[in-house]
Length: 112
Length: 112
Image (cartoon, rainbow over all chains, first blue to last red; front, top):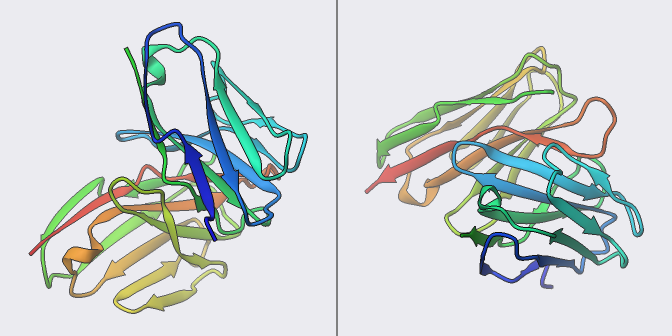
């Protein structure tokens, strides 16, 4: 049972480049989340999804887009990367609202 | 915004010492969760407290939910190097949105 996996683990981008982060879960969870974690800021919610085909904005959505075309996958896109998006990105999933969140191992993104 | 403030932000102690970390809010939460995050990994749930005044024990870790459900504490007895990590508290969005708010965390280092 892989749980939550994230691809890639590490990426370096130049300002203005685009990329997509992939999150996959094999637990049949309805809810999926994308967070960013910066020093001293804790985990901040970017976007989330309450089911296949749905997405919603979190606390810090600007500069990011998401898609949930399949229940098991949640994609986070950066259309034009900026240095301020240098961070560690975590994906999480949960079976029920306010339930235990299962996190992936994170993606470290450096934007130069 | 339902802020969760954690203190202290950093804590470095010797193996065998006891410690308490705090999670405080001006908002009432229906429940609070505690996660531990080890370097290079995603957070992992330790416990969920749901009743005001509730005390839960997990080996050497004791979690308490305040009577008014606005705060929580984590007490570690006889800390060990394996307790090193970032401790995060989290509470559900009380507006009905399907997400958690995370505190900024306490980074604990236990020195052998």
